[in-house]
Length: 262
Image (cartoon, rainbow, N blue to C red; front, side, top):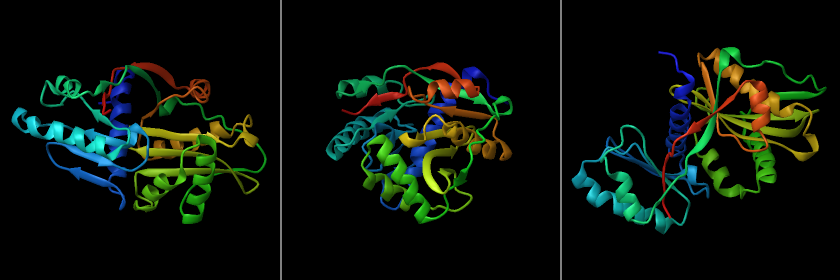
């Protein structure tokens, strides 16, 4: 069954959760995966990169595990989210987390697009190339752009990426834009079960306004389309929202994805 616009919030949350589960397979990450619950600590100080999800606990088990995990994440000192979904158990998990001092993640928005109808107009800027990262050197160039544009410390994210299997069939793809061979912008795509998720879109200040961001969106999504994906999702930021809308993405309300462990 094909996804509709009403499905986009669920697809965006699911893609982000599947990405976190994948990051948890990195050699330097700490993680636990079982039928009743999964958690991941990446060491990156971003709340969507650490947390608990796919909770399917009987109430008696939740009595023990929920407070223990909240304490564990607080001890780590990293921002984290306990994610909830339609199948979360026990039904009173939210009340349990609030009683432990966790706070509800506010409702937000996400963006989605049907790939068959997405704009394919890309810049013809001379010297522009967009390629998937395949070597450690290219990953280093990718991180150079990302850390200088985002202000994020390089080390923790670099360790995670280096600790992942980077084979051609892996679901996490990094893309690097170059102008005349010089790194100019980056993007990231995660191929989830039902959608392609766009993340970490950034263009170096010296190269903005030349259509590089558009090319960094469309190039990976064309790859996703050839692999059979019909829907792309993204979380908008002020710098990218208008560009994504121009390309055919639509903004939809998104209910809370869970609780912040604070």
